[in-house]
Image (cartoon, rainbow, N blue to C red; front, side, top):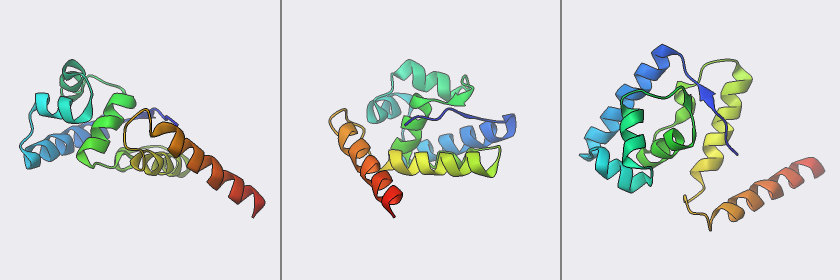
Length: 118
């Protein structure tokens, strides 16, 4: 599940400020964030410079690594914010490995089956 969440210029600036704060709190620099998140260092640098338009997979991975909640920066309708919050929650239970992906997907599908029955 991947949702590309668009940002307003204000929410993007807020996000970048929060991102820097989270890194400073940990004493991390670009290279450490790259290692911890598994996102290539050039992509981390690009994101930190604000060179992105949406919360794509690399931005989401960085958020998860730093314990940030991407839905905080969502704009748009209530339904869009709700959808993003659900996506964030689903991603938060994933350990970031390829091996864990089918486990999380299976869990979510089972929840969907239970909801359809009930």
